[in-house]
Length: 341
Ligand SMILES: NC(=O)C1=CN([C@@H]2O[C@H](COP(=O)(O)OP(=O)(O)OC[C@H]3O[C@@H](n4cnc5c(N)ncnc54)[C@H](OP(=O)(O)O)[C@@H]3O)[C@@H](O)[C@H]2O)C=CC1
Ligand SMILES: Nc1nc2c(ncn2[C@@H]2O[C@H](COP(=O)(O)O)[C@@H](O)[C@H]2O)c(=O)[nH]1
Image (cartoon, rainbow, N blue to C red; front, side, top):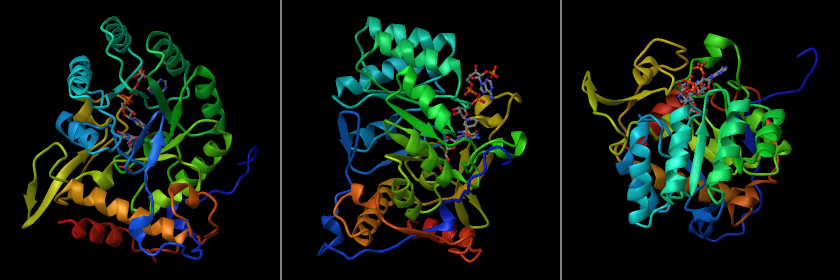
């Protein structure tokens, strides 16, 4: 901190301060959120990880007006996926890396006039020339596609990617539940993810997607308060019927596996491992969890004294270092899991 001292905080350090309610019912609060030229039901997107989303879930999310990003870990299926979604008149939203086969995919999409509505460039360290080059390549071949680039942690990185042409940037290095980047490299936004969102959002001219570290539905409202337009969520949306993978039983309790995209399980080799496998309680229906998220956001809007998500932006807050869960964050997560089971 010698050269750049600033105070930081994370989700559990913040409480938003209620304002006078102007609604008669929470259902009157509008949780719809725009990204690019489409408007979605809530400002939440399930993480583009293969333990969270598959094609079936992507189709369900698109049909039900939720934003989704398909993962990039079955690279050869992406072209056909875009085609399938467009045949059904559904939004196509895919991920790419920065390898030669990703460039080849962009060429094929352009040649076949299959224009995805959204492409997310998803690499571990997104503040990189390789990402700027890919943004520019996508924009040259598919100029109408909305390009999300990440992941990053700083205002400088936001400027860099926006200048390269990104339509939105994704913030969060290391706060994820299946992440070990913080331990293996010493770098990232773990422990100050909310403050990083604030710094990046202040620098941004385009939307910010807060990615990683969301542990409760209230953290979504806090992310929006500090400048995020959308929130990407992994572990809180893991463990459902609709997520890929089997239900496990241990000592009479049900679980599902959630693993990082840079875990040995995903990579199938032990090289540059920055992710791990965790088991999460089985939570039943994802549909029910998403509905509860929407209801909790509606309630948050009402506490903000507003009618829509943008009313969360200017609400006052207090910093209450490490105290809102009284050391019981794990218990709270467990209880939330049980609500849906
Ligand atoms: N949000 C987060 O905190 C993190 C997320 N992840 C996720 O895991 C997945 C796989 O990540 P991973 O396989 O590690 O890398 P990526 O697949 O993201 O790597 C893509 C390219 O970037 C290069 N690269 C990656 N990290 C670095 C770095 N620190 N410095 C220089 N070049 C780098 C890689 O080269 P090379 O492999 O040759 O080094 C590769 O050419 C992605 O989905 C990513 O989003 C991974 C780590 C952190
Ligand atoms: N450092 C790593 N981060 C990862 C890995 N796989 C995914 N991720 C990131 O985590 C979020 C989800 O976070 P959660 O707290 O909601 O579970 C995801 O969107 C990625 O950005 C990984 O292997 N290593």
